[in-house]
Length: 266
Length: 305
Ligand SMILES: Nc1ncnc2c1ncn2[C@@H]1O[C@H](COP(=O)(O)OP(=O)(O)OP(=O)(O)O)[C@@H](O)[C@H]1O
Ligand SMILES: [Mg+2]
Image (cartoon, rainbow over all chains, first blue to last red; front, side):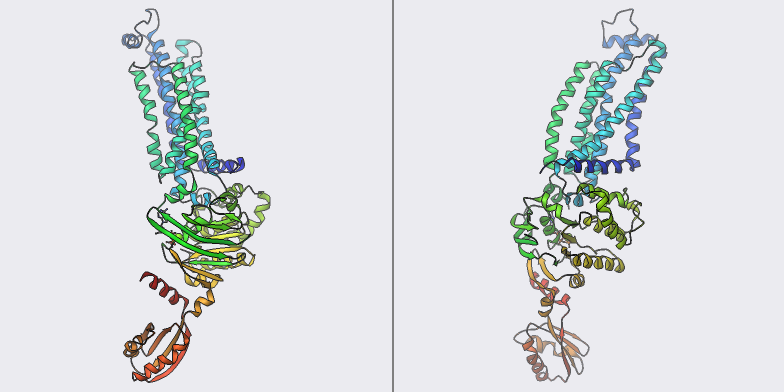
């Protein structure tokens, strides 16, 4: 049972080709990044254009009662928004691989293409590797492209107030380069695992998508002022997810075993 | 060791026994039929022989590879046409085939000419760049067969290769199977279509969860002798007399004709004597071979009883 990279790459090649031709999936993949990028830009733009509104100060003081009198409340809230938004931004690298991997694993069952595939010499580990790569590469690329657009957008709308580039900052750069891929791996692992057990792509997507709830919950906590997010907080999340990634990887290879996949049909 | 050796093979899914005690040998270069009704365990058997399912009991050795232990080695030398074509609809025919070439780590420049030959053979030449989603059922089935051949397998398992095809496509597929056999490949053909098995296979195993009968197709035929008798008047009148004979033959009556199934040709004079004794005026009595289909159906009926 040697691992043959060529066979894993074959699976990657096929899935990637299939994804490129799947317009419906591409559209649903594009919606989330668009929202993730546009919403914070609009929020920052609002703060920049109404810096002197009185209530901004009370909002800012809700989060930080020690806010100095001379400091700009709008600027404080912009920084706070950018920090918290990263938590939501992480939903994207989790969610995109869920969309792709559900299609590519449960979708193969649904369309009965899995049996011929399993009748080839490909091993479970090669399948997991190829399919994961096909979900991770687009997810990470989309995240990075969205990040670049996000930075440019935020800097343009914030320029009049900040008079310099606000983004990328250390948190986001570290987050997008290191934490986001770990989260993508996590979303993919969950989707592969669930897909191995259910027989329809849609069901796999819906169940897997539940894992984004804790993420959204934490951001909720940040907005409510309960959780204080920062570089350390996100790094801790990343470390936890890294451990989960390893567990998921081994579990998927076990679950993608032929006997299980074939005999769970019908 | 070549060929396929199956000994005491069985598979249970929980409480349900899908296959049990299957024992047979397929010689290299032979076309072997697995014949059985729906749910007989043909697909389950083929899945065990291609390492997709682990047998609950017994063992199978295919072309020197233990099916339960050396699945990877096994799958390099066998080709499986699954019950469903299972093609990637958004990909073109060529991309579908290339994927399997890559999975088999083939040198594509060498594998293509051979594959192209089969594409032409099946009338798919010139359609390579079209997405499979636009193919008809027959075209898909043919493409799926070409896909099982990309790695030039020595052993081919075909699970109902003509099901759902129109007569012409079914014929193309049958001709191709015969051609593959003439290339010296070992073929196991699953089917519930008798005439197909009869036409293509040298030997056949009739299965219904377990092995009911196995032998060369001609021998199977021999076990089905019958006597066609023409009498005066309504033949139906003599049916009871015949079925009360000690060897209780099956009798079909139609108009002035009687078809009496015999297990032994030596019973023919007794049948005639019985008819004459019952007052029949016999015009003619001709020994005939029962169609294989009746032999088969009888076999299944006995099994069901
Ligand atoms: N994965 C499975 N789980 C549970 N039972 C199964 C499974 N696969 C097959 N069976 C059962 O095993 C028996 C044999 O099924 P199989 O598909 O092998 O029959 P078959 O001869 O191929 O039938 P058909 O002509 O309809 O294709 C059936 O009773 C079927 O319900
Ligand atoms: Mg079947």
